[in-house]
Image (cartoon, rainbow, N blue to C red; front, side, top):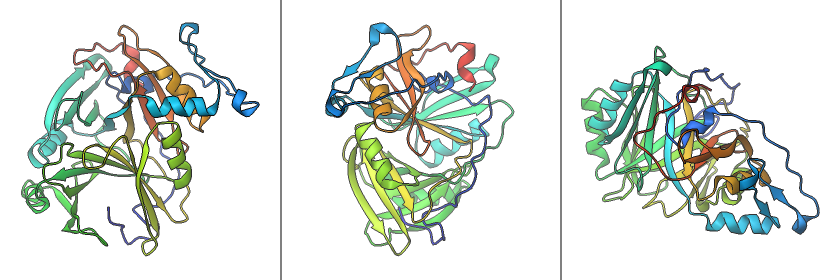
Length: 350
């Protein structure tokens, strides 16, 4: 979590966004909905406490909040958890080998869809119903993606940072920051890169129940982002730290203490209001009790719904897909994950 000594603060510089290829991947029950875009219906609020917010999905699932306070109260009691993060890789077997041999992950499940020309694999440190996981997506014939400037890194907690770094080095991995205390603190960290160039912050956290512990994204307005994730997504601001020497501020958001849960790390670099997102990183999946209410709350508090809530064809799982004010995607969905899904043809394309 140390700043890089660059003019744009913690990492990258702002530039124009790169296009996402049409055949992009997709996925699991929660992530699949990003492929099924629908128009966002307008939401109008009049009269403050008397405002009505209605879901545009189907009449049977119509939602009405009597006020913004009512919507906030529901969000805060919704049963939510970060489920998995989705991103694209150029060589699935090579990436799996690196994650399992160097970072100690296990392959939780893997699925090939030859008719759609993509394969995806879930990896992590425990069962998906209780641990945060990674979903890797490989599109046939695509061996390189643009990670962009907005994505930062993933965080992994380990018993011994130095030993992990030496293992990565011995396996031919790239070490970009040698082990040592984080600047201004005592936590020992290091940085490594996977075969596709995704950065991993290795943190010394002996005995942590959730080793896959962070996803770091850069935002252009930190206060706006914090407000969105608190109100629309029901997350808690766990801590916030300003680093004027390196001209950046970070905020940790999540659904429980950092020591036991995966968190979203938002980073603001002084004076940078926009970042290129590339076409490599995709989205985070979030478990929720009600995707219809979730979508309406997101609209109310400044987000965009890019896939209206509803069931996925052929299965009972319901999802919606949303964008935060900076354009980062999340896919809230009901929590019934399946390991034996058959995906319709249209799900593998954006």
